[in-house]
Amino acid sequence: MEQNYNIPKTMRAMILDTPGEPLQLKYVPVPVPGDEQLLIRVAACGVCRTDLHIVDGELTHPKLPLIIGHEIVGTVAGMGKNVKQFSLGERVGVPWLGYTDGTCRYCKKNMENLCENAEFTGYTIDGGYAEYTVADQRYCFKLPGVYRDTEAAPLLCAGLIGYRSYRMTGDNIEKLGIYGFGGAAHIIAQIAIHQGKKVYAFTKPGDMNGQQFALKLGAVWAGSSNDIPPEKLDAAIIFAPVGALVPAALKAVDKGGVVVCGGIHMSDIPSFKYDLLWEERVIRSVANLTRRDGEELLEIAPKVPVKTEVQVFTLEQANDALDNLRSGNIEGAAVLAIGV
Ligand SMILES: [Zn+2]
Ligand SMILES: [Zn+2]
Image 1 (spheres, rainbow, N blue to C red):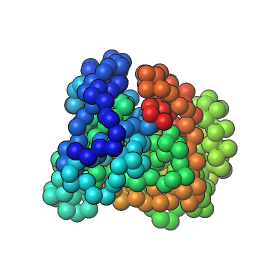
Image 2 (image 1 turned 135 degrees about the vertical axis):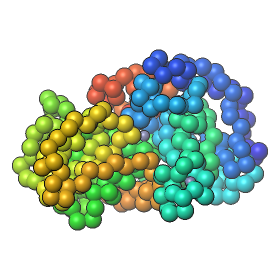
Image 3 (image 1 turned 60 degrees about the horizontal axis):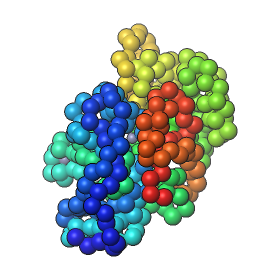
Image 4 (image 1 turned 45 degrees about the vertical axis):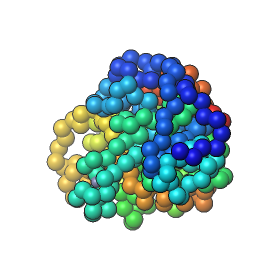
């Protein structure tokens, strides 16, 4: 392994031993990179709703014990012998998609997000709630220089999967509803507005701070998730993990409108009349990301320019950050500043 300075033998990490219980601060061995892997000194790691679903046991079969975290920004501190496209000391971003086989029927159809043998950072392989991590170079991104480490972190999942959800709404939309105005929404709203679309923000009933935040970012309307917006929408993205929002969003979209479920987990969707789906309305989900989504988003973000609103916590405060996200007390995105 090539390395650029003394790497310690152990590191601090927040470990998930048992879903349903808080993460525990432990000293664990610094991982050693494989031939295709980078050893990354973690500067910042975003806190995503998916992390909550893993910690709370709603996403089953995580690797255990596990280091969660899949919005990792850091610098290359070492590398395996096959690494060519990154150099020591270079800043790098690590997303949720950590590995694909490249050979299954989905990979062959350019649908690597659905790969049958995919690995996911901070879920089936260790992630970034730690001082160091390893990641397969082929799934890492170079990051735009304009962003500080903590600002870049939310781009790596909230941004990427948000962008994929936004892309799935189609090319010909003017009026876009966004349900759940957190990390992903605040990034995607900026891109949509930059591209001339009108954004309608739906928050939890009574969340006036969230509605003010959306209006400040340029949404033309903000209201409660059970409100009917003043105009019919062309499409809606649901980022909140609440199944009851699916029929609510179907009511808000016009004929031919698309409702995209952008999260990895959602509570059950209540039954609804066929009338809500009639006239070619579409419901679809979005799973994971492709590397192309990442490249596109990271190219567009500095042009808008997308500004990420972050609330910063320390590594040791990871459980507080997760609790705040769970109770809706985060404006924008939560990020752990680890080695910045
Ligand atoms: Zn595959
Ligand atoms: Zn995520």
